[in-house]
Image (cartoon, rainbow, N blue to C red; front, side, top):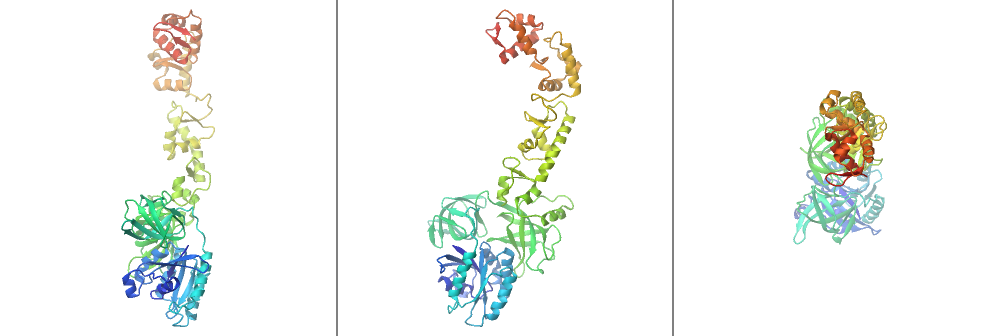
Length: 590
């Protein structure tokens, strides 16, 4: 299926032409038929000569219904622009063309209607030139009459050629179905309709509406039941879920769109004279949505372009690269500018001059992951996908991507951060990952671990600097000196562990002792009982020479130590598997 929208001034024969092409009346409201004026969006469809089916979204042409027109044109890839031969180019013709140019619609055709009432040559020439200047220079131009049927066969053939030229959207694209109608059917429940521009929807799918999960209960396309549909297509979706949908909301693939109410954009005025002297409030249109938003220029808004921040009245599911159409809400409604979304989660502007600096960044921004990372520095895979910019390059850590320059800077900073930590607390065996994460301002400890490069090493959850032997870091000089003095004192009696007072005299308090034990410079067998390293192996060798089994008293005598030391030392040897306790009194060497 192909979907094409109409455009043109009020009472130029858009609905009449659609009726003549399809045999269906797109005006569905009684008031529309009574007044001969399209007020709401209308829909009709037909088969083209090739067998391809085309659906028309018929939009109102009156200036008061510009918002409705934009809701119809927004999700549609091509347009059939209608100009009456007996009236020529009119104000709403221009307004609709400005909207199409701003939205980036570049495919369509021109139908000059009422060729039976006036010579269409002048209107054709004028309208063709205007469309070409707006980027629709490839649009075919035909003169037709919806009343007499003149030129309709040629128009159908031109629609076939237009349909063949339309790009084929990816069925794997994330779904964003802007709702243009929502109603309840007795016995069926909630039904919404819209134009699906890309992606695939099937019965049973789980989608999201206004942050709530809903399930597709049933579908119709062009009044025919379907089980699956791919874009581009007109579709009616029966939903299961506790929701009250409205026009302007969207059914989306969960986690594939960013619900943004604050966006940074690059503004391109629709016409040179349409930059307001003092921008405050505008209406932002995308798809079928029309949302009031406050505009904060980040720098001068010229007749060419400029950067701005939009505060939307409610969140919209957006991607970077989306185009918002900005409309002046006061007086005669008219399109003011287009706004290309460059960031759906912009940074705060806290300091003086931050807005100006941000405008400079946005001037060079592009709609891709690399540009987002230059601003946000680090983003998760899921965040980039939701922003519409799936990551292309390698991850710095599973699930994380970084701006290359920022990552290189962090890698260079980490050794100095570790050095400063060691200087502040030399007894620490290294810098804890959490402390480094906080110092570098990173959101995940894993990112810190990914930054560790030689001569840094990661040991037991800590970052240590310099050479590491058997997983142990060196000691500060004062502590190392105190340990050497203690070991010298124990040279002749290695199992006479000093009392706490003597340890304190040597400068070995609890923290110093803990650091020495972690470094392997001392052996702790119990609280307050420390021995030279390797003392347990020497003790086991002495105990092996005793008659087996032996008692604590015999062990104490052999080791020339006190019961205060002997009991915990034997328990340590038991844990190490060097000795074995046989009963309450006896042990043996294993």
